[in-house]
Image (cartoon, rainbow, N blue to C red; front, side, top):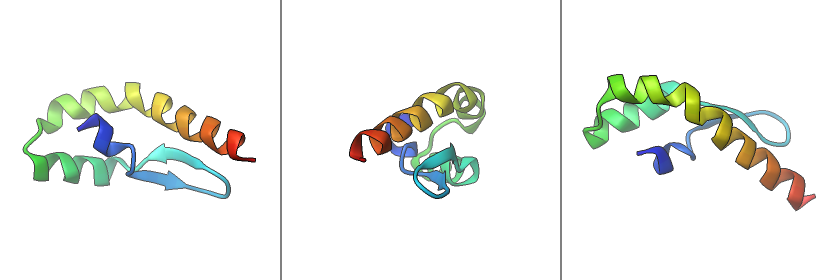
Length: 61
């Protein structure tokens, strides 16, 4: 589930700045994942995912 949520981002000019929690929780529901557990974990993994996108964007320049 965490791998799949990496594509559910809110993006501005240049790179994503946050996960779209609504989309992630909808995806979790569709996959049968525990939404309560995911809601607890998301705030902790969001910065890691966003940082990876930002680093990837910086390296592409």
